[in-house]
Image (cartoon, rainbow, N blue to C red; front, top):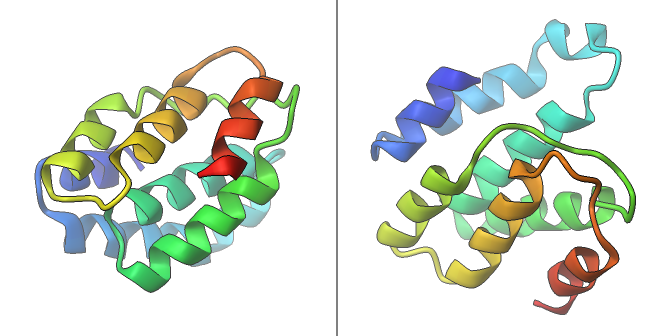
Length: 119
């Protein structure tokens, strides 16, 4: 996962997303006690750097799973969000909000959920 983050942050998007796709389909995912943080991280990367279709699917998954009070800390994704914006993401504010929510050790707030659903 860390290598996929590095790849997408440094502009090697296709390689990073290919690695994320491998992670999502690996048997390793079924061994996790709580796979949701990994799934959300994968979703964020597909939303931040994927194709239009991948972004739509990822955003839907993120919105469905980011619920009020849920602690979903993945890791600090703000540099990755900045890279997505530099690469021309069509919704830079939403990428930033998602990165902030997923980078926080605090539970997801009601305000964050409302912001994600409004955009």
